[in-house]
Length: 353
Image: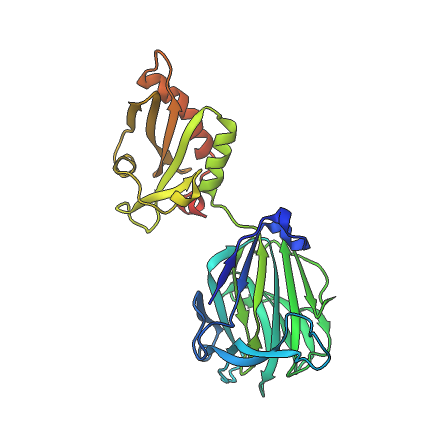
């Protein structure tokens, strides 16, 4: 079971609260023996896929014990990678699919359980695909804590330190990404030098192991800055620049077909993802635009073009009418809004990311 908690930055006193939102990956209520929902198992390198399941495990209590005799660990569900395929260049990952992260602070617990070839556990982040991502991992056999970068399947040299990583005990891992800066702490202490890398600005986050490592992971919290698509940024900026706008929405195909046009940006974010009105589909598919007047407003639906001049989306503007308002001067009022957006759009994919 995954709990999504959105918190206001002003009400949270942790340093990571500047990001504005908190996501808790809570494994305690997920069914034992099953992979948690909201994740996908994938494999970098070769060998068999990972076997990711919820298992019963003892994990340190989140609250301080009330008495010296109180239990310091609690038995509940934890995430485990159980496959023992000892293929050397084998990196099972379990990726969280419901969010893409730019700036974030992640906190988790991990325990190295067993492994003859390797005993490793880590976090992969800013994942683009299986061949492009960062990861930070701890090695119990090698007694190292390292950062690596994978670009087009090629692994960088390690950055980090040699240190004892005890097997069979829980360790606290914290990773912070802010812009191009990457930091990591192990058991509350800085474990790698602060890094600066521009390869990936955002991506998915996932749990990572190597070879035959059997590793456990506890509840994980991610404080992050919610990402906005370019379409949403364009709408927000237009409202600031053109205060006379009554309403502004962007419509675009989101599933690779012009038969499925949806709202991709609106001041009311709850509308995002809803089907677009018929005139939006017609404006994208055909020449021309849509114009109407009602209750003192003028409504225009116009095409949006990419940098090659191709129609990729439509924009709906609602503006206050005035005495003598004509279709032509409504167009004249609307075109600066459209042009200010088009100069920032390279492709449809850019608009939706």
